[in-house]
Image 1 (cartoon, rainbow, N blue to C red):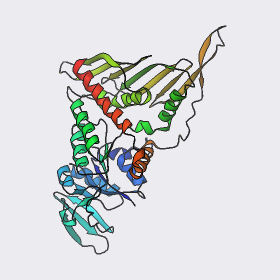
Image 2 (cartoon, rainbow, N blue to C red; image 1 turned 90 degrees about the vertical axis):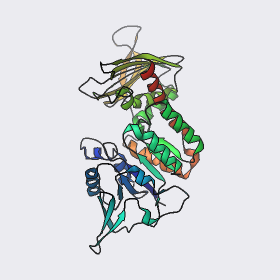
Image 3 (tube, helix red, strand yellow; image 1 turned 180 degrees about the vertical axis):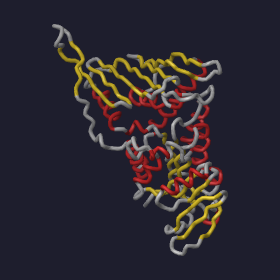
Image 4 (cartoon, helix red, strand yellow; image 1 turned 60 degrees about the horizontal axis):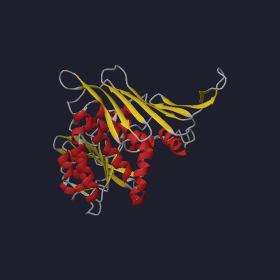
Length: 377
């Protein structure tokens, strides 16, 4: 049986980046849903910009209900186990207009109107909701969807803006039957997965340090947000996935005269090593890099690819060992991380025991640490 999904937000990560010819595809939620159309039916989208919705509907090859107001969409959702709606005629093509959906029948050429509330159809059955809206409403919308009984709720990163948001989501995970997911898609990238396997196998020895850089050039949003929360949250999630939560965090956040984040220098303290991260909002380029040093080797990973070195007998100095680059093999390197993430979600919906709540809890913890940095460093 196909899953019934809704997509809230048609911006860059929701859909628009599919038009970037330089990226691998799919690279957005909409692109992933289109690739998985045999398993997932997109039944509704929502975006406050009607022109964006019209553009999306020209790109999307199937009928889909459209909403301009999330509250209107939420008001008609029927979560898992509740009464299913009457489905719209699959031969009808939807176009949006303010406050209503006009369905143009390909067979008759006539049109009929259904209000955007969708109440005439008796409700909208949904078991997968994707929140790809601005970060300030990620938490509130996810909470609403979990309350409505949607089986799986996938939030874009960051899942919220402060520790209070994370506490609400953790409480909801305990009280709701919904499975909460966060789009840290690098966890499903075959290269980053291979790094984790190498850490766990100790084939390069013990991990001794982690260093990282995330430079975005992104303009800070407000004093409680910026590139640390918007971009480096991915790096911190990888760190927590590889190493667990640290014993403590120290460092410094540098701000401009308006109190907006310009850069940060953080250290995450573990029992046997320290992980350091530098971020910046003043660079005219994007960089996402992580370097892991082991007792017998080094791994460099990031948006520029994956490289590995091993300790071998020096060819320059007698009695010394030096790092020499070796091939970094990536099993299944052709696998798309977006499709891998959605595959994991689909599998967990059929077998709840496969749902990894620890992954989500670590993702929520990223915001706890960033909020702490903004408040105290």
